[in-house]
Image 1 (cartoon, rainbow, N blue to C red):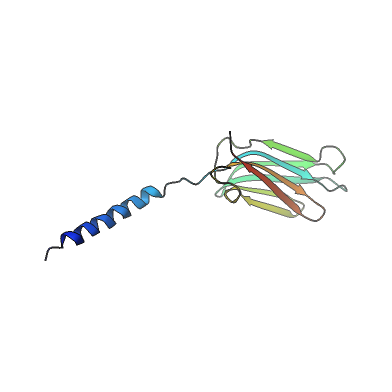
Image 2: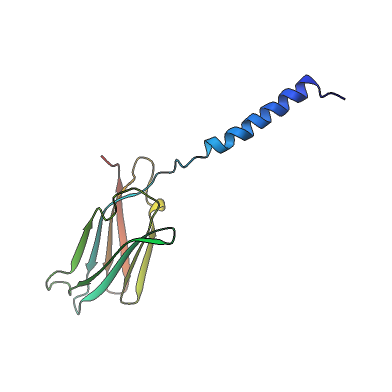
Length: 137
């Protein structure tokens, strides 16, 4: 028995919508632009070695190790301007004195605020992080 015209049209419409579904799920999520990372040692008693890494999936794209002096004595901070040249979906890891911070950049940005400035600082008891997101110019 031949399908009715209505059944045929309904099946064709469902197939067309299913075919478009793949086209509508392209990679349109915003991607982070890391414009600045700052590491700071707020502890006054001694200096510490900080390690900062930027990963995309499991690949390390950027890694720096810096020894920062005690707060109030010498240079107790390190700045990294535009550590990567292209936007992406990154994880930033900072390790110091047994403390770690892992930041997923996708959780910090939106379509209108994809640029990031991040600050990681070793306080009296733990490693903290803050961020500012804004529209790239």
